[in-house]
Amino acid sequence: AKYQQHVEKTLLLAGEKNAAAQAKAIVDFETELAKVQWTKVENRDPVKRYNKMSVAELTKLAPGYDWKAALGAAGVGNKLDYIIVNQPSYFSGLTELLAKTDLATVKSYFEWQLLREYAPYLSKAFVDADFAFYGTALTGVTEQRPDWKKGVATVEGALGEALGKLYVKEHFPAERKERMEQLVKNLIIAYGQSIDNLEWMSPATKKEARAKLAKFTPKI
Image 1 (cartoon, rainbow, N blue to C red):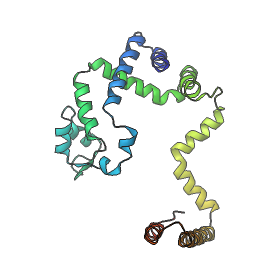
Image 2: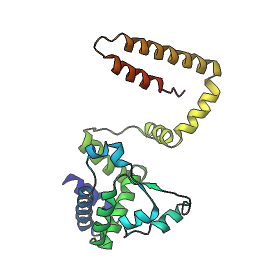
Image 3: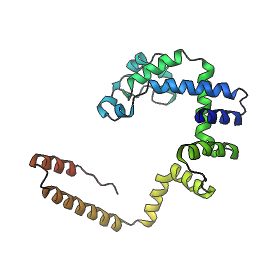
Image 4: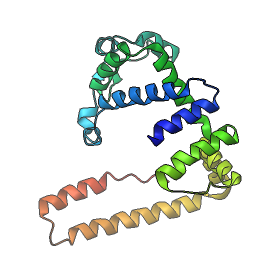
């Protein structure tokens, strides 16, 4: 109920006059959408999630969507030999759901997704409404972070890798990297010795553990 109320409030802030009905339609649609998605347990199976499909096969699986046009717009139209589809049954279920859902509901759903994504960066009313639900109602946090912390987090999220590269260039000389690489090598050696000395582990298991340790690749 609180989630639907939050959706309604956000739509009202966006100027929607029929926000209550839209919010109900959105939540109903999301509920049906959740039913065709895999469970967390199913998603833990990497083999089950690895499904190679050609564009033709994907189109057959989910015929209600113009995949060629979408892939073309993304700039990969004729460049794909195959696509990895994580949840095949989700796409077929989504196609069936979209076929029986009115266009107005789908538009409202996408409007809500856009507002939900950018609410933390909009006016104070949007920010407060977003925090009241996702911060307080869901996690019990009662006080928002100061603006400067939000700003730092936003920059870190958007430019973290690029800034990290600049930081390393200025403050992380090559000799420090060599020192850390040697430290990691020493840790791997010690870990291997620890495996060899484990009394409860069988020789076959030790061999597998050693093989796994040998594949460890430090990234510094």
